[in-house]
Every structure is written in structure tokens, then in C-alpha cells.
Length: 170
Length: 141
Image (cartoon, rainbow over all chains, first blue to last red; front, side, top):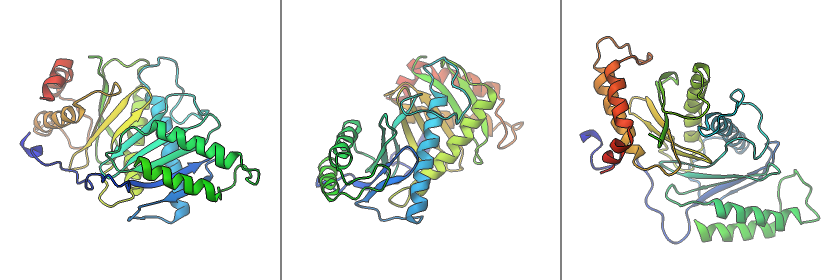
């Protein structure tokens, strides 16, 4: 155990500050994989251009979902092959993953809207917060008569409320 | 042994070299476990690309609805991951202990070929002991 003694081998960013600057970015996808919204608050590192980044993120979530659906150790029913298309809410999904530099929280609504929030690795469980953000989406975007479903979200009021809320939680 | 469902070891190129099931419902067959392992390898790599800050080393913990997946990557790129009950404690320590067993009983075995599936009786025996519940609790101390 000496090799691992004392310090952690994986470097991680400094502990979260209380001032609420720990939200990195947020994505909203619809069920076709169209990125409806991308907000970013604190992202020093960009490896890809925006479109490629969104595609990669959607691909990661999609594949992780098929992985968890296949891996589910509690259900004995036949789960089909790895990568079988799953409807929202079908099969075992996941709600977050953590690396040494960030934590990604994920929620999928029954209509296939995916909300992804990337925060500091030491933030707690954000499942309730994502539900709240989904409610904001319903209130400010879906109920906006000028919004066409499936198009990128351009609602000033939604963005400001969202920024404020994310500052409050993370 | 209820806390741990299964344990995987994958080599640096994503090939499954060890898989042990400890009683999950609907056991995976060999092909499925190979596919799952290489898929995990790719997801681990993609998660590093998407990091908002530099220095990301890939997924450490995946929290699914019915299980947690803890992953540990050694400095040489071998990945150890364990599927356990949600909220199971001390899994990082268990994985590091499995890594120790791997170095002792697999890498020091003169008949073991690097990056190939692990078939070492002593490794199996010691691993089974480590995974038993009381032992996992002991590792947490």
C-alpha cells in the first residue's frame, strides 16, 4: 500500500469555493440528439469545436446508457444485445459520473429531453436540481408560444433564471 | 457477498483480461462481457476529452440507477472496475488491493504473458478472499 500512501495519485482541482462558481457547463439535448441549449460558465479547456463537442457528449451519454442497461445486475430478464435501442425510461439508466476533474449529472425526461450539468467533482447529488431545471425548461421554454419544439432554445428569461439557479447550487 | 456484483480487469488496449461474477442476476456471457469491457474503455477515453479543465484521467465512479461502478486505472493503463451496490463504501481501497494482488500474483508469474487473459490460481484464491464482505470492511480501516 506504500505506493498509494498519503497523497492521491490523480490530481484534482482545488476544493469548491462557497461563492458559487463551480458550475462548468450545461447541455440540453432532445431525443434526436439535437443540442437545444449549451451554456458555459467556466471552461478553461476546449479540445474540440462546439458542434463536435456536442456530438461527442451525446454519443458518450447514449453509449453509457446502453452500457448501464446491459450491465444492470439486479434484473434477470433478457436485456438484448449491447446497444439495443431503448426508449426513455426503459432499462437501467444512470444519474451521474465523476472523474478527478469534473462531475457530470444527467437526467432524461419521459419525452427524451436530456439535461446534463457538469460541475466540480465534489458537488453532491444534483438529481433534484436537474428536476428543478427541467421545470424551468417547461415553464420558460415549452410554455413560450414563440418557441418551436426541436429548435435551439433562445429565451432570454430562461437563460438568466438558469444562470442564477446554477450559481445558487454549484 | 452481496455488496459486489462483478469485477473486470481490462488491459491498456481495452481487451478484457479478467472477469469474475459474484452473483448478479442474468449473468453476462463471454461475448457480452468482452463488449462491455471495450465499451467502457472507450467511454473512459471520451470522458477525458470532454473535461472542462485539463488533467482529466477518466471516469472514477459511475452511478447508475441500480448499481455503482468504480474504476481504477493503474499508471500503465490497466483498468480495474467493480460493479457494486449503490453507495457501497471502500471500493477505491478494494480496487487498489486488487491491483496489488495483480502485481503480486499475475505480473510476477513467469508463465503469464502480458496483456493476455489472466489464468492464475493463486490470484483467483486471493481475490475471492478479498472480495468477501468482511474483508472489504477491513480494507476501509
